[in-house]
Image 1 (cartoon, rainbow over the protein chains, first blue to last red):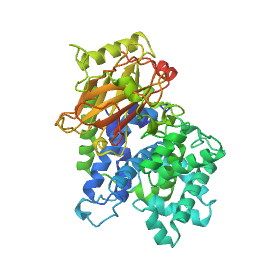
Image 2: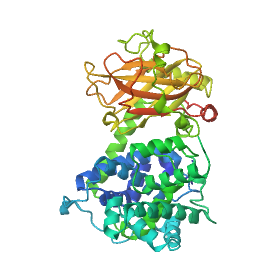
Image 3: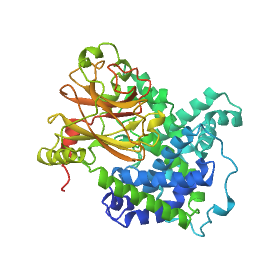
Image 4: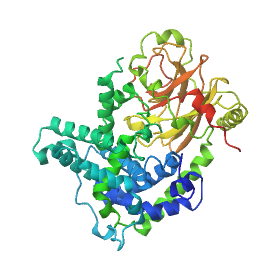
Length: 191
Length: 289
C-alpha cells in the first residue's frame, strides 16, 4: 500500500473510524452511478452499492496512489463487483423496474473526486488513438449492462469482431496509458 | 506448457475480457492456468487492465457521474453494512498475517493441474481414512486453535500463512468468503468461512483437500469432511490433515456424499485457496494483539 496519509483509502486501511463515512461522502455518488448502470432495479443497485463498499473496506490497503487515482481504484472495484453480479443474473437487460421516487437527486456541483481523475482524463484522450471501431465497441462495453451479443447487434458486427475490437482496444489503451505516465504504468499488475 | 507469446497474448485477452464483460468459468480456468504477475483468480487483484477500463469509464462518464449523489438512507445502510462486516470479521477472523494472502502464488499454484488430480491413485494415499468423521483436534476449540496459530505467527514470522478463498460458480459459494490459515511447521490449521451455503449432512458434506508440493497433484491429502450449519454465517473449522503436509500449495473444498470420498469427481468445487509464497508471508510480521 502506498498512499498519502490524508487520502481516504489510507485512512480506511489504517482503521480510522471516520474514514468510511468520508469515503461514502466522497465516492457514494460515483459508486451509486456505476451501480445504476449495471443494475436492473433500484433494489439491486442498492444491494450492489453495499457490496462494493464492503469490498472497498476490505481492500483499501491495496490502494497505491502511484498506480491509480482513488476514483479509478474505487471504480475498478465497483465495476468488477457489478460485472460479477451481472453475470450471475445471466445478463438480464436493464429493465424499467426503477422506482423514480428513489432515483438520486442531481448534485448542483460536481463531486470533488472529478478533479483528481487525471488518469481518467488521460484514458479519454488516449482513446482517440484507437481505431474508430474499437472506440465504438469500448464505449458500449463500458456503459454497462450491454453484453457482447447486444453490442454486436447494435453495431451490426459479427460477435467475433466485437470481441476482437473490445479486447484489442483495451489492451492497446493499456499500452498507451503505460507510455510516459506515472499512473497506470503497468506496475499495477502485482497486488 | 508453453509460456511463449501466444500464452501471453491469450492472457492479456482474458484480462481484457474480464475487465469489460467478466469471464465464464472455463475462461477463468484458462486464466488461472496461464497465470501471470497478478493473481488471476483473485477476485480483487489489482490488474492494470481493469484499472485501464475503470479509468476510461470515468473518462467517458465521469462528468455525469460526478453530479450524482447517494441518498441518505442508502448511505446509512451502506455504512451499517460495512460496520457490521468489520465487526463480524474482527470477531470471527483475526488476521494472522495481514496482506500475505493478497500476494498469491500466481506463477505456481494456479498452474497446478487441478483438473487432473482426482485419479484413482488418490485412493492409495487415503484408503485408510475414516469416512464418517468431522475434523477433530481433541478438546481444543477452533478458536483456541486459531489463537495458537496467531501466537505461532508472532513467535515465528513466516511459519503461518493465510490464504483467501476464491469462489467458483458453484451455487454453494455464491456469498462465500473467508480464508484458510495453515502452518506446515505445526501441521495445523483452521478454515474460516463466511456465507458458505449450509449443507444437509444427510445429503452431502463439504470436504477439504490439501495439495502438497511433495506429493503428486493427483493425490491431494484429505483434510476432513465438515458441515456448515444452517443459520450460521461465520463458521470456523479446524483442519484435520490425515497425512503429513510437507509444503501446502493449494486448498480445495468439494461437495461430496455424506462421510466424504476417497477420490473426488470434482463435480462440485465451491472454493479454492492458493497458498502465498513463503517469503511473502515472512515479510509481513504478525500483528500485535
